[in-house]
Image 1 (tube, rainbow, N blue to C red):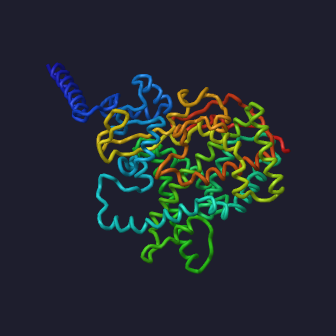
Image 2: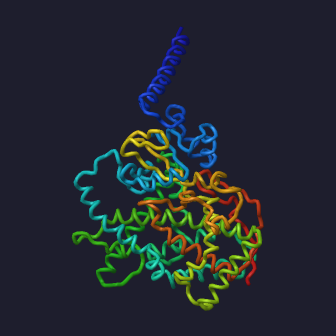
Image 3: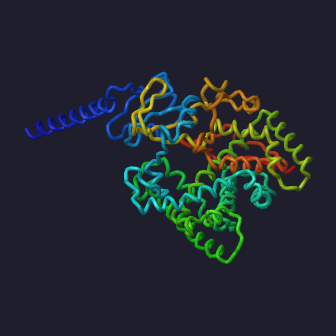
Length: 479
């Protein structure tokens, strides 16, 4: 009898959960015409498919099922509408903050100490926000082309020369990805923090890897989990930056002139007060996190495809950089005018970013009921803006899986079809930094070395971010 009653109770609980789930879906839809799709299973929703399957495959499966570039789902417990395609890219880019506002994952809020949107700031937080408002102005000015070239013109060349001398000169074989990761992080430390100590950089290299991996992890801060490692790394990086901030404040008070970004932000004053250390550390940590790994991934796969061929891609890059070297003079530092002449090389970089996107998309929240493509996105629902949703879509790119830089040379991509740096008010502030670093690195590489791939068909790992399984081993020859 006990077994019968327990079984009956289990069945009743199961039916109750299913009924609540179905009723919840109906209540959330009301009389509105919601996009096609489902919320998945209770509790887990469709979070697993989103986090652990390749995002482009996830989008393809949904498009095949719904024949639409807009669909509803439930991610991390939030009713979410996924948007992609040129119309979606234009809509989100041009409707912030009137119709949509930025929304951060719980992992992002925890890692970067961002405010919880469900909790009121209060007077103290509002006052702190006003003080911090000066910092972004400093950042944007520092990241403009003229600011980048003024600071990085000689520094990037010096770091580049040291990198190639230490890691490439005298070598016949090497793995590209670990080396470009080390270079990108070393440059970020120099540019953002004014630190050129290799031991200091090496100490924090793995911590930034852990931090980056934690953004799209399950937010379970339990020892042994990806997110726990990310939280530990975030705390250690933040503490390190706060110690550097204290030193910058002391140095600035002594009249010492410094040209790194941290020194510029520390000098941002509102009502006679420095921007709070915790806010500065979060800003800097976020900027470094968003630039270091994407630059390394793009450089690694760019080098792979230049070596993979076809040969005319390599020859066009060589010719372009030979002309630049001749016009500026051998040994002279690159200026922004030289960078702008690297048109074909940038086409190669764009094609690399198209095939190997480093950011799958971004979250937003509907601030009012939105009508898009004939469907309603209810106020308060989350929006996952899948910016990379067009990248490998034959509808927007012919032979989308093939590597063909000429598609950007000929401007065949339609408006809003390819936006690797986002768009609108929140487009990536580091896009000029990224462009400068990638093109300068390739210039130095292509004028010094030739190379061959050792594993032309190397596997690409990663569900949300592409990673080379073996680090892209190559054979090199000094020119």
